[in-house]
Image (tube, rainbow, N blue to C red; front, side, top):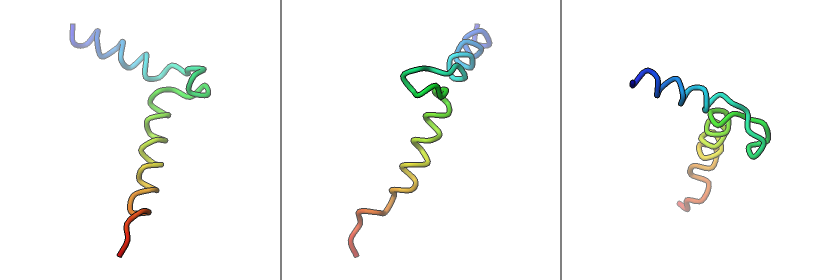
Length: 46
């Protein structure tokens, strides 16, 4: 059962979606992480 569930998750994460600009959820998540990483520390004052 766990393997079947993982297959469904993998299929969903790798399916392009119109709402994400035809990127996959995995790609959109990776892009968001990169954006957050780029912004880290931008608003700190020293």
